[in-house]
Image 1 (tube, rainbow, N blue to C red):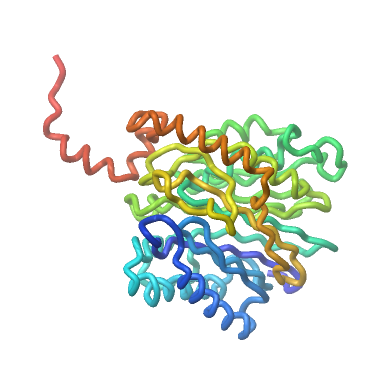
Image 2: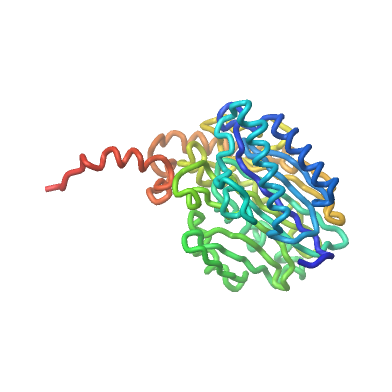
Length: 370
C-alpha cells in the first residue's frame, strides 16, 4: 500500500430480505449507517455510503489503507454480522445472514461469503467513479458490459477518437473453476478474451487496467455455491469503474446498460433473464416479478481525497425507460419457456441449485435402456 493512494472498497451481502427476496428493510440501512459513522469518526475510513439493490446491503467505502486491508474487511464483516443479529433476525427477515458463510472473521472476507470489489489508485485532478451493484445474478453478469466499455468502439467512441485510449486495456480474467488468473490485452488479444468471457459461468473479469498500468475497473468474483458446496443464493456482484480523463467517459460507461443482456440468476438462481437498469430512489428497485427480473443500480461519485462526493443516481433518467421496457419484453419471452432451457440454466449450472435433491430422489428409478 502507498499512503498517497486512495482505495474504494465495496463489500456487500444479503443479510436478510424484507418480504422474501424483495428489498432491504429500512432498519438495516439505518443500523449500518450508525455503525459506519463510528468507523469514520475513528478514522478507519475517510468516507462511506450505505445503499442497497434488491435484498443486498452495500457498503461503499473510501479510505487510504489499500486493497485487502484486514481492518477494512473486518469492519465490513462486523457491520454485516451486526445487522444480521440485531436487525434481520429479530424482524425474522428472510434468509437472515445467508451470505455470511463463516462463523468468525479470519483476516479477509474473500471466501467467507460477502462480495468484494476494491480499486486502489492515485487520484487525478478530477476522478469520477461509477459503482454498479446487481441483484439476482452471478459475477459473470459484468463480462459483456466491461468488454463493451473498454474494448468495443461501437459502444465507446473514445477508443477511436481519444489518443489516450488507443493503446487499449489489459483484462484480468479469473477461471472460477481452477482459481487461476490470465491477463489479456486488447485490441490485440480481443478474440482470445472473447473466447473466455463468452462463458460467464466459468470465466469472470476481475480487474481492468489501461495499457500503461492505470487502474480502471474492479469487479467482485465471489461464487457462493463454490464456497458453500451448495446453493445458498445468487452472488449478486458489484463493480467499480473509473471514468473520464484518459478513460471511457461516464456516458460511454452507461451506454452499455441500455442493452438489457441475459444473465444467469433470477428465481432460485436457476434462470436466465434480462439485466434491467433501475434507480435506487424509484420504485423499480424492487425484486417482485419472479423474484426479479435481475437488475443493476448505478451510482456516480466524485472522489476527493478518498471522500465520496455524491452520489448521483445514474439510472434515474427517462433515457433508460426504453431499456426497462425491453427488459420487460425479454422477461415475458423467457418466462413463457417455463421450466425449459434456455430460460432454465444449463445442467452444469443447475448442479449448484436445489435440483440435485430432485435427481437424487429419482436416481434408483432409472433403468438401462434396451
